[in-house]
Amino acid sequence: MTGASDELVTPAVLRAWPLSEPGVGKESRGTILVVGGSATTPGAVRLAGEAALRAGAGKLAIATAASVVAPLAVAVPEARVLRLPEDRQGSLAADAATAIVEAAGGADAVLIGPGFVDPEASVRLLEAVLPQIACPVMLDGPGTAYLTQYPEGLQHLTASALVTANIRELARMLQRDPDEVDEHALDAARELAERTGVVVVAGGAIKHIAGPDGRSWTIEGGGPGLGVSGSGDVQAGIAAGLLARGEAPAKAAVWAGFVHARAGEHLAAAVGRVGYLARDLPAVVPRVIAEIG
Image 1 (cartoon, rainbow, N blue to C red):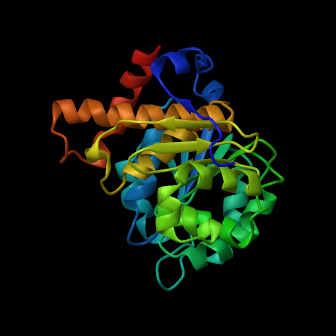
Image 2 (cartoon, rainbow, N blue to C red):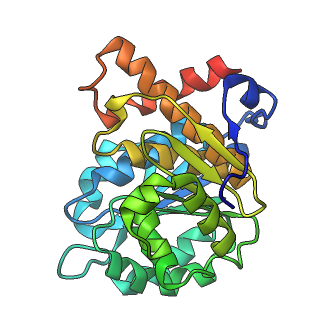
């Protein structure tokens, strides 16, 4: 796979691969279910959920740890917030699986992983969840640990699954040294996409996206300000919102990666190269999408 060509994403590339018309009502733009968070990390699902709505999803449901449901429901009044049982460490307990599967039955796409803090607990939960979900699924952050243990665990979702991972998570899924993966991130993303049958987004200063069909894309830009806590949750939310709107995983990933980068550049110009917060990014997303046209 080394040396295979990839496509540099530009506004012209996206205009030739436009998003579908959004429709006139919230039902037509889809429902996104965001599953994640813990007693100590409720902000991640808020960032991801708000980004999904800013990307055009019509309805938002958030399923998270019971102890943070009340303040989160106030903070995100647009969302239906579902209370899930926690383990002693505040992570989602394995017996939350039934409620997650039930909620996924009413969703057009499911994002799992923002705010997870324990990869082992994530795997225990997802063992009972993912085999029962039929709609498009996106795994993010520690949720990707499921693919480390079950590399073929999303292949029942033919052409309907997407994974976003930083270099450390990508290396873990491939069982490789992180420095080696960092040096050859595009090839690593291609290998994981081929192995798992899902679209893979490898995060970093340069974003690499690879599909199981052999296609791949590179996104440059964004700036150092995107290297801040919560930024990846926003990118995951943008992609998940586009999945809920009915876009294929590859298109959702490419558009989300580019929009995320350009949102960072907008904020760098308005605020500074560094110092803006991840919570500032979602509000810029509609403007960036409109500018691409």
